[in-house]
Length: 225
Image (tube, rainbow, N blue to C red; front, side, top):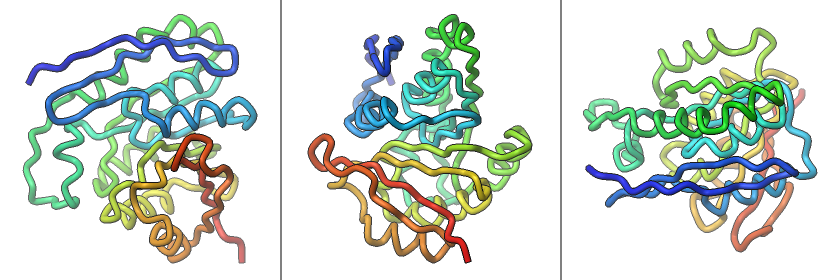
């Protein structure tokens, strides 16, 4: 399947990066509204240290964080979003391609000089939330002190993924980890996400609502006894 790509200039907090977007017949991997909201949020919220990004898509958030000096682990599935939106049916044999991860790697390479100048780093890894070997590899290759931040844009759109997401977060979150998610409010079910989060020991807090229409930043915190 052929894909159309275009190069987009993205600016945040005085830094400018070049991001390649991908469009195919079945999916668009672009800098969407949730990513734009998160970039705006980054102007006044200090995200630093070791960062894990879930469902990195173009990799724009990971690249921008690395340009600001963060050590980032950018993750996504190796197959197309069309395949991965299935209800985590492990018997489903997806048409797995390296396109998703390759797009992130290309965008990291495109901005590598600037990343290195600022002392940042991006490691790209495959991560399917239900895949135990992926999770074990993530933990093994991750920072020994754990991640300081876990971020994600528009990763709560599919209700059937909430359990896998919370189980993943419970395995890679430490007491000092801050979890920040940008979400398009007209997708997913935030009440169900909050309920599922509470069931797994997290409290969900809305930090910003409707910076852009129907878009918000939410924070998940480990609940303390």
